Image (cartoon, rainbow, N blue to C red):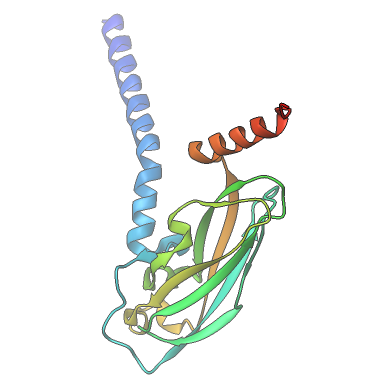
Length: 196
């Protein structure tokens, strides 16, 4: 009888460990999905086009830029703030510059503050949707097209929002294979001595 109790307890404990492991494994994609659907944590939405309904009310949108420690690029918004009508399509630009002597790949993460506004701030097109590769000395202007959904004015929490801040953080990532091969090829060309 004692062996049966130990066996049942062991089986229950193994079941709990497997269940908790499954929850831990599923928590990251579930949390990401939850944030995208609800705008929780300042995650923005993505849309194909802006809504047809454009209100007379305006909202200020501020633009912020930062870099992960060690990212050698220079990165800044070209305009610090703009005022747009709610529902209207806005277009802003960020500038990035690679001052180094090597190509650098970067990827941008983003968020919106205050968090309540995240679910009402949607991007139609954004440089953050793809990785960016800047060659040595290259400077680029990167656009983001966005709108603030008119539903913000009737939301219980977000309706008091008068200013939204869109922030990006760039961090360095590994060069894609095609760029790495190009760099390796150019390094081989410069190390070979010319033949006469």
